[in-house]
Image (cartoon, rainbow over all chains, first blue to last red; front, top):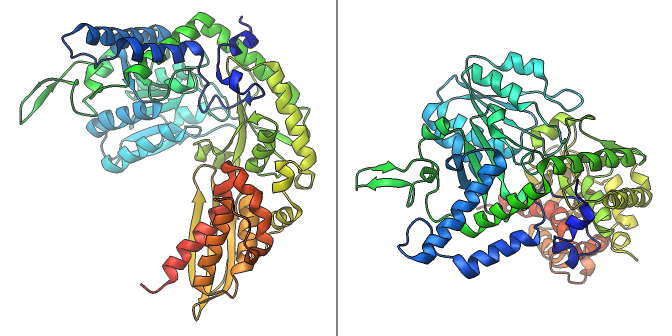
Length: 405
Length: 143
C-alpha cells in the first residue's frame, strides 16, 4: 500500500492550491509532476512528426510515441498492436459504433446497452441506430443500483448484435461483472464493447480476461494529459474493422480512385496524432503501475468505506449506489430537497470541489427519480482528511440551508 | 459576510422556495423551453402577449435556487412591459450578473442576484430564464 499524503506531493496542483479538497477525479484527474515533465521533455528534446521523417529526431519522436503505446499495452495486459490512440473514451466508442455499426447493423438488429451508461456509450449507438434501423434496448437496474442480471438474460437475444456496457458506473460506482456478461453476449454472437473510462484508472484491468471485443478509456481520467485515450481491440476484432477517419498515416497505397489501408493500429490513427499527450499518458501508466493497480483499488475501496461510514452521520443526506465490494470510489448524493448546484456552491466556499448535475447519465438519473445529484469521487491523492473536510462542509451547508431540508 | 451569505439572501430563498408565477399559462401566445445542459436544469416559459405588451408570464421546470428565484422575479418584473422594455431589462440583468456591473434600479428585487457575478459557475443558472425570455420575444415578434 502507498501513502496517499506522499502521493499528493507528486501533484503540483496541490502546491498551488494547498487547501483544495479535490473530489472530482471521475470527471478528470489531476496530473503528477512525472506526467507534466514527460510531456515537456518530449517537446524540448524529441518532437518531430512520427512515422515519417528520414532523420534522427523523427525517429526519436516515433520511438517515444511507440513506447507510450507499449506502456498502455502493459497497463491493459494487451499487445501493443491492439492499442489504438484516440482522443478519449468518447472518440473510441464513436469509432467502434460508426466503423463497426454502419458496416454490420441492419433493420431489426438490437443494440443492448444499460441504464447506467454514460452518454458516451449511448449517444453514438443512437446515431448509428438511426442510420441503420437497429433498435436500442437497455438492461435495467435493481433498486440497489446494480444491473438486473435476470433482465439481462431475458433481453439478450439472437437479434442482439452489440452489447455496450460500462465496467464501472460514473455515478453509482457500481463495478459490473463484465467478464460474465460479455461471455454470455459473445456466445450469442454479439460484439462486446466495454466503456472503461471509470474502471481503467481505478482497478487492475486485464482486457483479455473481460471477454470483450473492444475496450475504451480516457487518459485524462488516469493521470494523463487531456487529448489522449485508448481504444483497445481484440486483434481479430481490430483486423476486421473498417477505417473510421481517413487521411494520412492510415493507408498503404492511395490512388485517385481508392486506397488500401494500413493494418491496425495505424489504420485507426489518421493524421498527426496527439504525440506529446500520448507520451504523457505513457508516463501516467508507468506512474500507476509503480503504485500498483491492486494498491490503487485497495486505496479507493478503503477511502470509500470510510467515506460511506462518515457520510451516514450526516442527517438528511441521501446516498446513491450499492453497498458492497463491487463499488468503486464514487459517491453521488443529495442533501434534503436542496438542489445539488446550491449545495456545491456551499461546499466550494469551503474548498471542497465536487461535481453536480446529471454527470452525462440522464437515463440513470431518470431511473433514480432525480434531475441531478452531487458527486464526490476519489483517487490516489485523496486522504481520509479530505473525507473529513467533505463531511464538515456538508454539516455546515446543512446548517446554512436548514429551511430546505 | 461570506460569498454564500451574499448570494443566498432572504429574497432569493423566498422566491426559490415559493416561486411566483409557477405553473403553465392557459392562453399563452408563446411558449419556449430552455435548459442548461451542464446541470440538467430546465425551464418552460409561457408569455401572453397582447398589443405588444407582456400581459402575463409564467414558468414551469426545475432547477437550483438561483435559476428558480431568477425566473420567479423575472416573471414578476416583465408583466405589463413592452417587448422592448423587457429586452432592456434583460440587458441590464445580464450586465449585472455577467459583467458584474452594479444593479440598475429598475431590476428591483433581482438586485439580490448580483453576487452571482462573483461565482462564474452559477452565471448560467441565473440567466437561464432570461435566455428563454429573449428567445420567446424573438419568436413572438412578427418577422
